[in-house]
Length: 108
View 1 (cartoon, one colour):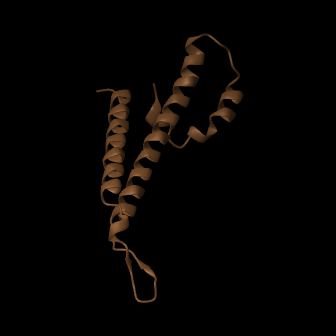
View 2: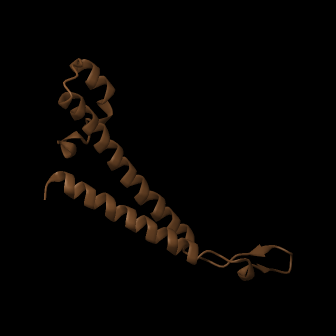
């Protein structure tokens, strides 16, 4: 399996984890019938893992989005070369300098 296939698999796995955690957060949220009023008319909410599930969901979808954006940016540079459009190296380096950290992962 080449690097592109591995990255697509990782992105799909992250998206499935995000969807599962999002559904789990929705199922475990506090319902209105579970909220109690104490003697001082203050609401007391029971503990729920919904916040943890929602944070996991947001973090995994963020990681998947970063991978997709970095991969598409790297492909965009390669597509310009395939189309025969001549661009200055300095122009490409300044436009895509944020990819220098992870660019070895996205060699196409």
